[in-house]
Image (cartoon, rainbow, N blue to C red):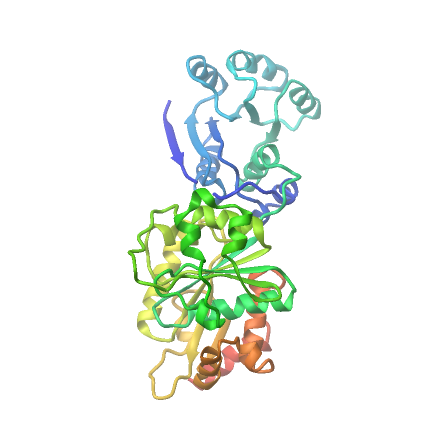
Length: 430
């Protein structure tokens, strides 16, 4: 009997239609699970693979998951001499008439608080009713998917009355100086103003963050106090740290000071992110261009990731490396969104948009032309692009990105207008 142990960490509990999401296989609607222990006993290779896939999913990050090759008898033998976890998942091939008898030895050693999910072979309604009547939390008929398992676990351990978690959107540049921060600030402003949605912009670049400058703010407190005082974090403390930028937009600003070294461990920003998710429907994370344990963790846990690139070879290389890394960090999430920025800079050799994205095998969600006057005026006046020129094509691009990352619209590849039209025009131009 072999065991594979996982000790991973998500965010806070929160649920929104978990059962329906599992039924439809909609992983995006499944919320992270709380800190619980799960032991799965698998008899077949397909179920073993499903459980391993669950263990690698970001929604299970706080869950301590152990997977064992074994049946119900193996579980009973193991727990006769050790405490049972919060949840036991059992695969069985027993016939309906014999299943209750097979479960008897396990029932004798199970703690009263332990929940049990059974994955069986028979779609038998009387069996299901008998199992539920005898304290089994869920009976699932194989084959099952990862969404089925996660949905079943969430239905047990996530409070159905809990407020749903807010959406987190992380912006990062493929290279320094590509404008990722500027784009994240404008998108946060667009989300808050277009949808009248409470939005928090969190500047995670503590030594060099520019969100306070871009919004013409000079807060005395912000992200540094939040990340260095996790024991004080609550809604009241956060409210004191936030700076109001507009009617529906609040800023958790970086200190932008070099009076200390900003070295963080992997989980340093998780308490802040958990609180932000409970505090606003949308949180935009301005992630600095560094690759460390804490940035990997932040990007892994965000609901959406947006990578900004400039059209040169170094950006292409970095974008490919980041794409490959994020696919491993987020194996069950959709591909990050890509933005090509500063396109058409005079006298600068550039890679054409079509040639840039062909090796990445992705389509950009936006191509933003180089406009030094528009962006310069906005930066120097502490205003957003839509405040400077609401009718400009760039303001419209930020509007479309805001719709996309909040899940209000999905861009179609066959679309001929808007961003698709701009891509084709720029491709021909090159």
